[in-house]
Image (cartoon, rainbow, N blue to C red; front, side):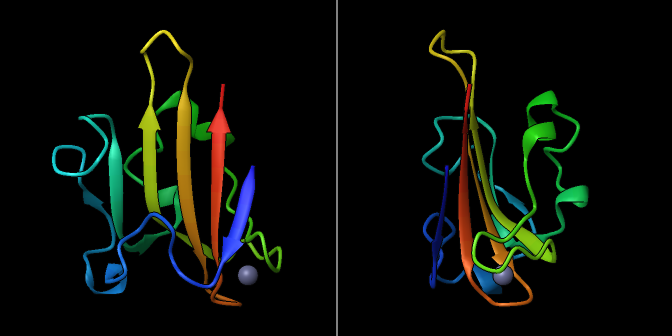
Length: 105
Ligand SMILES: [Zn+2]
């Protein structure tokens, strides 16, 4: 599932002033599950990348189709016996739109 907007939906409004990728697993709404936000890193450089679940993450902008995007938010929940749920928010460096992709197993 993918949705596009003009403003970030998961990253905070001030995301652009943050470090590129901040681990907020302990302070966010993620109950200690992996959660990251920030001004954005290319997906290839994201710290969650070594996780198997990351392999399905797409870098494509939902508005213009560009892969020139940065990941500004990622949240992963797994191991609850109810499946896995990952939310990824991208900002497009070509059109400036925000794309949220959710991955549910
Ligand atoms: Zn775009």
